[in-house]
Image (cartoon, rainbow, N blue to C red; front, side, top):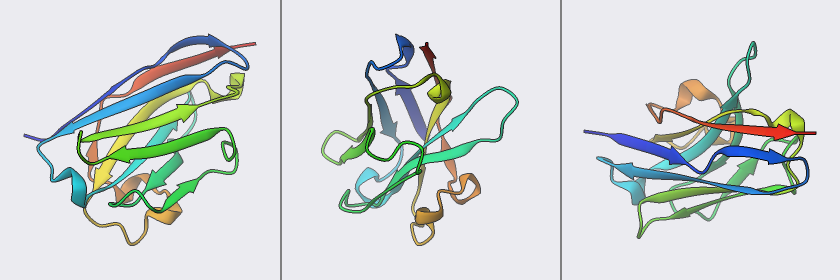
Length: 126
């Protein structure tokens, strides 16, 4: 049974930091590409950051570049998203996602990922 479990969300003030964690089971974690996506109320789900199977190649949305860092620990079956200098517009439910097919992860398209977590809420107050 595949499970992706996000944690680390919360309520913070603008300028503060959070680290999201996604623990994965039921997949060969070292072989999957991973991504973080977010969805705000009334908006479509959007790609935040993606990482290839090895962790050596990463992609970021322009809105988070320089503030967020994605990383993948294949020994711990865990994906991270370090979020610094948070802004109110970062407020959303954040989801981690996985897929064995990584040729298109640069586009950070939600439909390219077959496995999803349940999400964790991030709220940034001004």
